[in-house]
Length: 183
Image (tube, rainbow, N blue to C red; front, side, top):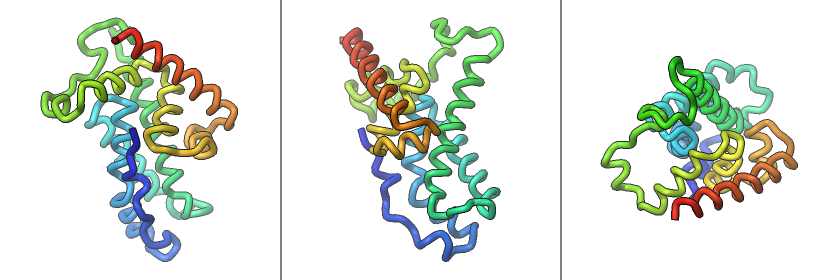
């Protein structure tokens, strides 16, 4: 499961472009991959698009304060992860709802078109990933979906490499158990 859209060729060096041009070029090169990341994290395309759009707006607003504009993609990726965390936190605190209570509103419903486009096995894996605790889901998605190395995952999650290793290991074990239950 890799989204190579975030690995697309980098646009012209950010320092050589005006802020609006640099953010636009970064958006064109990486938005799709970041939306895919957010969809896996949230299970909701509309919320994912909102999170990514807000991350790029934040980047534009803070462009002049970046110490290294070459790390803008890392900044946006971290913003997307933090935005996903906020959405998940808001969902879990929604009035009159207990997380995981099995009510119809507990998981977003995917359209028939989206479901038809994804193979059954792929859909099972995505469903299992969404059942993982937030941190484990983040670690697995960053490590295996975006194909980041441990240092990249640690930077995106703002944790140590050791935490990435242990969280990834626990996440893979939990994912195996969940998928074993489903088969």
